Amino acid sequence: MGLSYEDFEVNRTYEIGEHTFTRDEIVAFAQQFDPQPFHVDEAAAAASPFGALIASGWHTCSVMMGLLVRHSTAGSTSMGSPGIDDIRWLKPVRVGDTIRMTSTVLDKRVSSSKPDRGIVTTQWEGVNQHGETVITVRAKVIYGLRHPGAPG
Image (tube, rainbow, N blue to C red; front, side, top):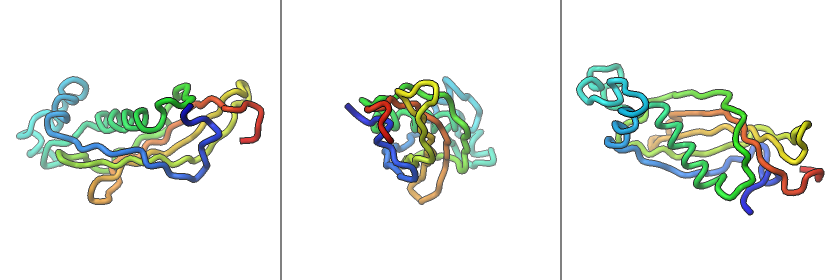
């Protein structure tokens, strides 16, 4: 079995993975889900405040979620999320940018109404190849306990 509630340590940062954004995937995602001109049209993007094509923030979130599931929650006792508390798109993600994702555990607690599971609060960060933080996401995930009733 993969990660369970007990495996998460408050204040610990976990390396999740990285992804390089290509022009074609930026445009394809945006055409389907966020067709703003600076995501789908290079001429319009060049004339925008960004000066070039950029990825949709939702694309960046989706990539981060994919990394998280493939490299962290796959095989775990994850029961999903009750929601995201905060998303900040701090810098544009550009064609060719490689974003490295980490997840830091901010808090964890066993559910008072369902003591077989706990809620883990994390902050995800995406940092580009220049060391700039481009996105932060604060989220909660529910994980099953390996040993309900034990300290953890």
